[in-house]
Length: 198
Ligand code: IMP
Image (cartoon, rainbow, N blue to C red; front, side):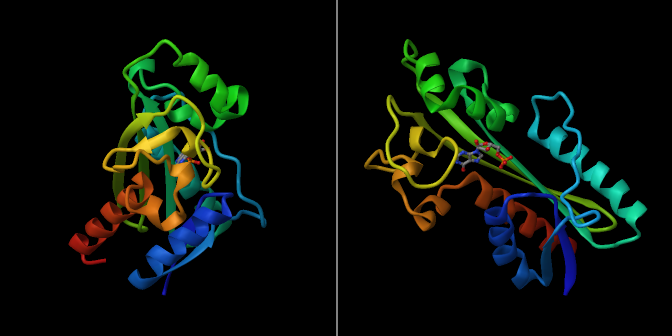
């Protein structure tokens, strides 16, 4: 088994990545320096990919310094609302903390075009090369919060192709997985690892 060090403080994401990468021969572990998830600097950028690459580069340097080895994995996601010029985008986590779902709904109270998308970008550094995976899930922002499942923006996002108009907040984990940007990003990484014969 190869070691795959995932730079995240999120136990749910770690479990999901374990489940996904183990059949590919990777043992997924949290990326830790002196027993802690290191703080890395996020660059000012609108692009999830640029943010993810910056994190990988910092993690590579930290790993070298610590004398450990292994592959490194980073994954970033966000909600991009069409008529808010992609807001909250790469700042989805901090915006949610600051204004909440009600803040987003207020900002959209006069907006009739409700299109939006979740995007995820996953980057794996194998030790030699960088492998990227991107995933998008199109959908619409509802007029009010619906459901309590999931996390983040789930209660105000209804994915395209969900005929009954349910939000992610009204779905269980398995149902959400069928649409999820994150699942698509991981699938794309897997495809490229297959192509590289890794
Ligand atoms: P992260 O980079 O995956 O941690 O995502 C950043 C932020 O985007 C999260 O804190 C959430 O607010 C939001 N987000 C990302 N993916 C999802 C999702 O699948 N559902 C709801 N919110 C999400």
